[in-house]
Image 1: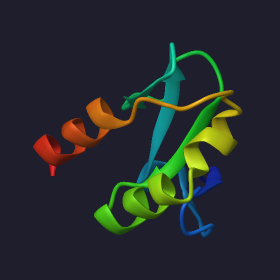
Image 2: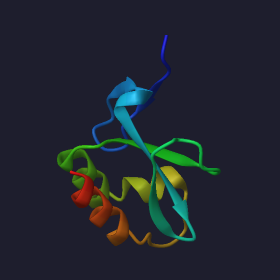
Image 3: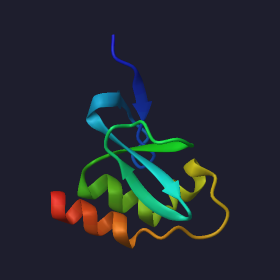
Length: 83
């Protein structure tokens, strides 16, 4: 049985393989494709709707427990290139 995680945007539970793990590295939001980077991670569906919702609600900041703003611009550009 595969572990489940909760999407920080839509708050639904899904198998870990269907979600994207995101971590903060020096206040920069980075996608963790292999889900092996150290530190606290946040899980989100790799859809425009969920990513946009998480960014608008500042869900990544809360989930990653970061003090201060996160640089999400690089993360958004990476998603657009892959999408």
